[in-house]
Image 1 (cartoon, rainbow over the protein chains, first blue to last red):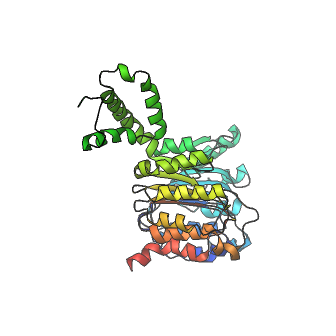
Image 2: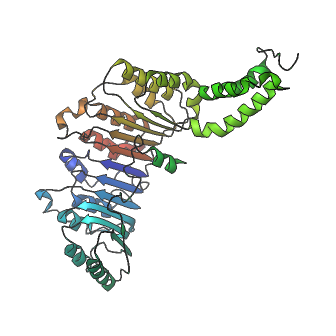
Image 3: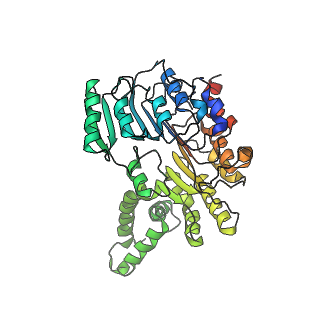
Length: 196
Length: 220
């Protein structure tokens, strides 16, 4: 994929592809790929984070993941410790459990969009107290459904690490990126808007 | 020769008439219908008609001809698309289509319409294909037409039946999903800028490796 700038994979990477995916060989599209979207695939979050950090996909602009599930075999995998590329412009994570979120938080990104992650708000609040959670983040966006009390705690913790722009603006009903799951036979109006 | 008695065989008349004939047939019918009652009261009816067609053609071509949707339609709608394919397909840049699983008469006709359109789309940049996970048909002509899309750079492959449980891995290689994705990678991987693959049919390991390594193989 020499020209590939956008790759979206939903559901079809199953356990059988896990071994091949884990191979840290640089992808052919690395260097051109800007946007990577992975949804509901059986790929370990730790593997994804390590690959991104090691530049397996090249210097990405955006990584967006939804509901990628793990199992116990991921518990021994380490997240990205070696970061070789510039920080991503955006990382968007949605519908992830504790294990997956804790692996992906090692991703270096400027803007973090985070919705329905970790099993409780206190876990999110606590995680953002540490600068190792999405290092280099300068902007954090969370769901509109955060209540005032928790949101204030989150902002305080973020401020302690220098992350001062925290917004509560993600709609629980809409995708974090309107392009990712566009099915033109059902979303013709939206497609037409995007194309012309 | 008077203006309203034209020689239809002359090159200039053929060129002028083609302005009208290049329009989608529904519009041609509407224009003739609108002009019919005033036809003989116009001092230069053909001139007016040509001018009208020229303006409409300029206005409508980008709107009508750059995007087409092929899904389960009634026979007459499909026949209309097939009839018009030679005229509009060359303008198409985007096609979204639904590949029928069943091999019934309407479905086969629909696929033949899609193939007929694809064979003439020299500027097609984006194609979005929807299929069912249980489709194991070969769709050879369709794949053959897809392989010749020399301007293609954006492909979406969507499974629309979302099967649960997931289709078993050992049957993947017999599915259309597998054939289609491999065909796209084999024919277009050097030019693709966007690829969307969405569906529960597992991606075979060999396909995944092809996706990952295509350019490396090409560079070697």
